[in-house]
Length: 233
Image (cartoon, rainbow, N blue to C red; front, side, top):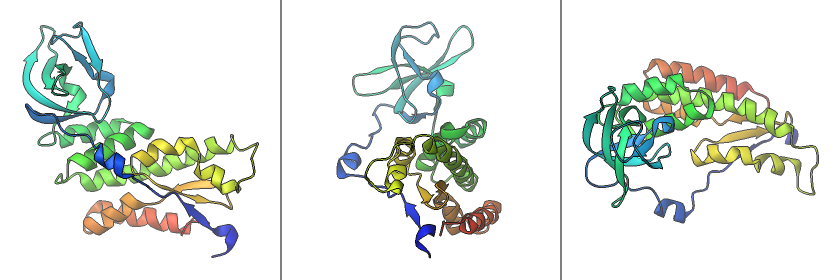
């Protein structure tokens, strides 16, 4: 491969401290995960007007203790967030790994951009036996490649004044990549075209783990296109 065609890979590095601080599920009830932070207000009472205890972020683990429906028809779960924090949260804000794979899939399909990738990662982390995994992997890969296009445009607008480091180092240190890196979504950089591409990991997983699926055939097409892109090998 010629030097100007080199692709520089973003390497995922997870320090020991990050692994040690991995979120632990709270005790006291059935496990659920926050997937829609727009509705994830933890309240003191099972009402939309109830006093706000705190806002829960997407990906937060909670333990469902009981359920109640308010007078206006909204269903709330009483959940433990920590050993000392509990409250009521709207049912639609969370999913259960034992039963809600199709509901989360619907939410993923209605999402866009980074929100879709983030919710797809939650699905893949918490629904290991779902028959919908091949479809979610394909969606994650497609969304990541779309994100690569936007990242390429965004970073190019910020490269007017370079310092003494190699140009590609500025691209690969672009802060817009950080949130994807935390989701284990990795990109490659085509130095000659100054463009990012998704590295194709989700597509390869579909082919490796679900070779007879419809999604595997689609993933093969995606990878062929990726391999044909100048500078990406």
